[in-house]
Amino acid sequence: MFVTFEGIDGSGKSTQARMLAEALRGLGHEVVLTREPGGSPGAEEIRRLVLEGDPARWSAETEILLFTAARRDHLERTITPALAAGKVVVCDRFADSTRMYQGLSRGDLRATVDRLHDLMIGREPDLTLLIDIDPAVGLSRAKGRQGHEERFEDMGLGMQEKMRAGFLGLAQEFSARFRVIDGARDPAAVAAEVLATVRAARA
Ligand code: ADP
Ligand code: TYD
Image 1 (tube, rainbow, N blue to C red):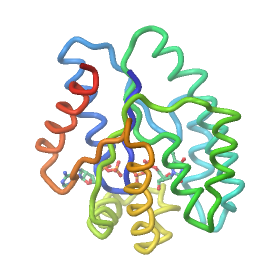
Image 2: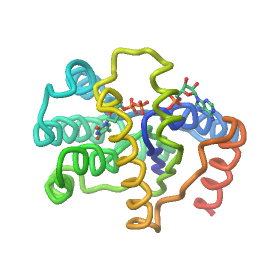
Image 3: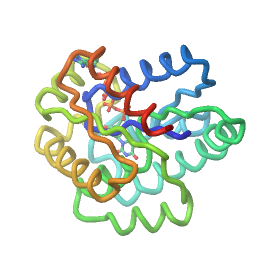
């Protein structure tokens, strides 16, 4: 099973991905916990290029190519082999993030994102958990981490609001695989709903 977490920055995806992986291991599953951009050595190198530096460093079109290149490498080297070996793959962000961040943030490039996805990736998750949170809360949580990977957070609150609305729209567009989870609760409460949702989807 291929499970992805999506949502705006600071929504709690990484926390929940980690907790889900631990819970599934506790139930006896073999789990590969991974993330995007990254998840393979080559893709982690691309991660530095796209997440550090000036927000205007790359155009949206160039970003589509870089994120898709990272995803292709991640898929070839990490995700596909793990799924073939019968493992559960839990991934923090995947192609839906490109549909949103590159597809919506600077004009409407969704059709370009989708065409490149069809050509180079051609795979969707079995289940996508959208952790939904108020953008101001998300941004303040994300800023609280004080890291160096802030290119998208530096695009500001307006952008996070646009991304939240976009993700909720995507959940309707792909309603068969999306589940929306309220992220404004303590991590254990969110994790309990996440685990129940995954178990229901496997049944
Ligand atoms: P994301 O991966 O979506 O950016 P993280 O899981 O890294 O989010 O969480 C961002 C910050 O918020 C971290 O400092 C984390 O400890 C904290 N956090 C995560 N989940 C919650 C929650 N449910 N309530 C409060 N703080 C949280
Ligand atoms: P991530 O490390 O998940 O950040 P956060 O924990 O703050 O949510 O992702 C880093 C940034 O990369 C995030 O701001 C969204 C952006 N991103 C894209 O723009 N396109 C993509 O395809 C992916 C996977 C991420």
